[in-house]
Image (cartoon, rainbow, N blue to C red):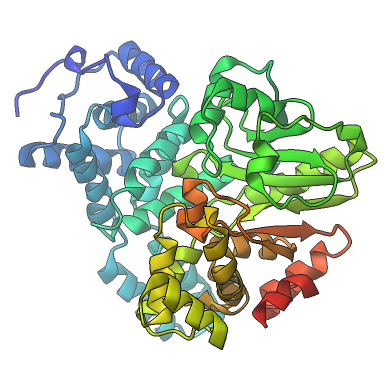
Length: 480
């Protein structure tokens, strides 16, 4: 391949296309421009010939050959290569890391054999240390070098974001993703994060990100956003000091009287706000992670606990902490459950009513058909007829349906999150979310998870070790 001067790199890079943040790109370009070395420019989709050049450059970084300045320049060069790649080129680059710089299986087998053949403690210890080192893929050293770039750990976060979209079609990338995740855990440790309240006076760029990232209940206008930041509503977020205006995760809270049972009422901009100093309950009604590259690194449980502590200090009148939460996988589970001939626990009159409404002789299939009727919830006759069987099925799903990989854990991700944090299932509410998303995911059903501060530790322990779900008698009653 013909060598080219570094100035031929594309420096007018659109972050929306590359997936790398603008600030990170600018910092890497600055370092690149300050370098006095010239390297070949790789085309956006990495040709077969260029693949060998990339492999050699990564190998040079891993072997740490040459002086520190030379090695650092190669790392910067590889970063410049990556941010200039298109989707196909990125996939090739990441597959190079995943395949060419993975664990050496033959060397691993040799280390295992040596450990098994060790005759004394000294030989065992030596073999164990060598085996430990052999289990670390060579690419990890290169990933650590990427962290030394300006905003290097953010560069890695953005690279992992690219990577996660490719794992289904290339499973070996899962190992690379886990390698990056382990490095990011250190830099995004919860003890290094700042808890801040987001207000109407916060920077406009931050407020825009809240509207963009909200993943549970959409914010469709500045008026709606303002409503969620004022009077009896609050928004709290975790920030990293290198990403001051970009929240990692945020939670929306309403300070009200009693546990809320309807999300539309809770966030309605036309409802007259209450006085937070007269409220007795804090309702956590939305929690959204914002950085896909940090997927699998848990912040939510720490965020809720920190916000509870902050609100307790500010409002002595608030004694109850609870959520108004969706049941995001219920409709999907119900469809598969009925297709696989699951028992729907219908009572005789319920079965007759569903058959009559749906005109399907199979009541289970008929229930699914009714749920697909447009605005069925506006017809009180239909809603009343399917309420009890549907709520019973939802209670069964929450209490009895477990994950395949862990029979102690609830299948529903929101239930598992709150139960593992020590919450209690307090109420299951009918038609609490009639938004398009709420109906599609859970037939409008929502839950109150109650965080009793004096019970969190024991609830957490019982759920994590025994799979015990703590729930009120009112919630359990839906099973009958």
